Amino acid sequence: MSESTIAAVMKWRSELPSSLRLLWASEEVLFYGLSKIESFHRARTLGLRVADGVVIGQNDPVPKRSFSEGAQIVRCDNHWDGDLYCKGRTWVVHSQEDLQALHEELQGSDIPYLLQKYVGGTGCGAFLLMKDGEVRLWHTHDRLAEVPWRGGVSARKRLAFDLNLRRAAELFLDGLNHSGIAMIEFRRNARDELEVHDSDAALFIELNARPWGSLALANHAGFAFVSQWAKQEGLQSSSSSLRSHVRRVAHPSQTAGLMDFNSAFGKNLYCTNIYPGEVQHLSSVIRSLVNGELTFRRSLRFLTASWTALIHPAMRFDFFASDDVRPCLRQWIRFAAVTAGAFWSRAVAWALECATSLLMLMRGTHGLRKIQSTRTHMTQLLLVCLGNRCRSPFAEMYLRDKLQGSKFTTVSRGLQVDDKSVPKRFHSLFCNHGLVPEEHCAQQMSERDLENADILVLM
Image (cartoon, rainbow, N blue to C red; front, top):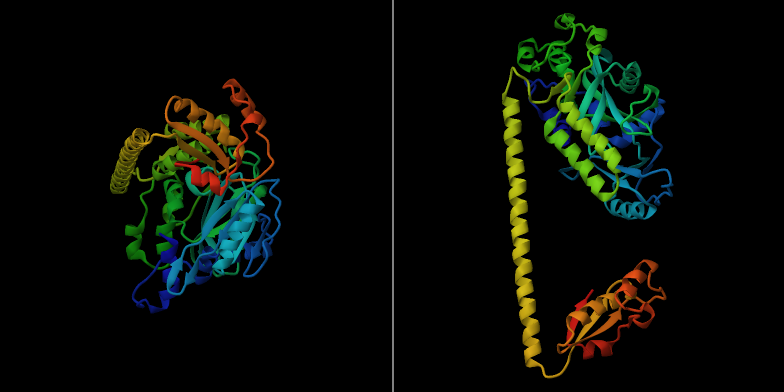
């Protein structure tokens, strides 16, 4: 269920026919679910622990933030642009310059944003089924894998008995007169993203207005939130069709509308979503390893945890319920289609790139031979370095060696005016090839150089 659907129902609920019964949250809960800024204000007012943050409005100057202790996160609210719904976005910035550029972009659209300190650690959450502000059913979980790995959508989670999370979630919903399901997200500010620390360290993140995707673990544990919700709303005839496909591991008193929490939480139960959850989680780990954000040791721990999860005896899988194969079949058909489409598009792009490169190479070789055969005088190649001028002599030396004995001569010039010397790390490269850096400093390019050049090469 997308956030745009939630926003649309909020806007047009009054126009829906009275005969249409919706299992839907209250206006207040949906409001705080769609507005990260308002939920941040409410959580801080109620005394919940939140990450250090500030709301930046229209015409506010960009704040000075310290990036020495880590990155900052920018969260933009869901909003309406006329009749067009615009989904909120989240950015992670690592420097004051990046924050300044993003600030100018958002100020141009007159959209306020929330600037918070980036919280690492592990995610966790609390589900509450409420009736007129009273908790009827609850469930908490810890996130073991997310997309991306640093924090985001849940990919793998485990059942947890966490009274502190329940109290914090109930405190946030207190006074909203909520009836229905609500999911509150928290993060534990752990030093190591793979460790799970004491619940007191949990920081409020947001009220999730669309919790359905995270209900898989609750369903496997026997917490039939949707069917219980239907019963308390008086939809007895629909409760059987709404009942989720559940692996019954909870106490038999669940069937009577009660829950023996100690019995249910005593089960060390896990749940994972192989596709797209685990696949995208591993992809984010590999990308971060290639980019240098993750060390090999830490990435190996993530990869090992993912493979170990597949054979864990207490692991349950989304869309793998034995009593209904249709969701599983649809999921794997989608996986096959997306994978085949991705491979096909990459293969076509690679083939086009190879063909283009080959064509350009053939045309370039033919052009040089044609120039060499028709000209009786020396052809001058002007090498123009667009960056630091000290790099162009190195390229000039290689071209001079390749064109030795032909009718080509090379001249090196630079665009950037500075007094920088050749970097020390280049000295060994120059000296090993017989090039003295001090004798080959590219000069500033002039109009006369352009007039004398037959071929212009941009470096």
